[in-house]
Length: 245
Image (cartoon, rainbow, N blue to C red; front, side):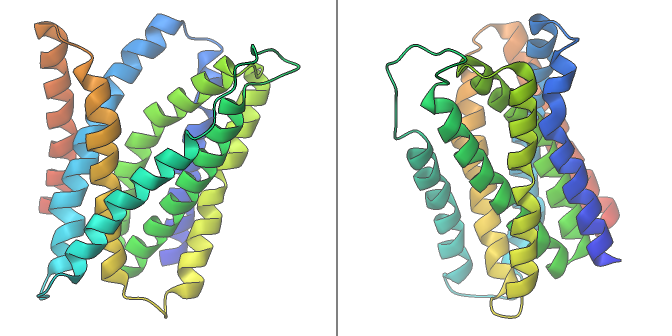
């Protein structure tokens, strides 16, 4: 049953990669309005899952620096991953005959990102099904704006909408590979350490990627809505902590 829940969670999360299909019908303005809310809610969810669920479980009954070293490693790991993703730039104009390398690098980065999502999600389920569920919710909420962004990058890189949707979906399937690796290696590592590593990933994504995006909005009205979105994400995680633990 545990593996069934994990498989279903991965399937739902991977389905976020098909968000580009919706864009075929929705206007750019409508997608931007939805993305505005989702980024704020995702940031709150990732922060809430880290501090309400993952870190308490990773540090419960433990002393010493080990969980905090894994937390730091999770943050630094994503910093390095982002540097690798953005290392190359191309100055040839984009076209259908010459898709911009940014598109290729984005797909590679998305593949690695989804692989890690599957790895940490499977680990969370193996430690505690409730932890797996909260991590799945946080990852899914984050994946929607992430996939919208990835889809936009692929279009900018010169891919057609149909090809961008297909490639985005294929890269999302690496989450299943990551989950399989976690299951195979589950006997050889301390699962709670990877929970701290996951928390580091989530905190980095929120602080380094989502918060700066939110800071671009400076008007009182939009900033207020962002705060509401953050509180919604935090509340979702807090309610799950209260009623599911």
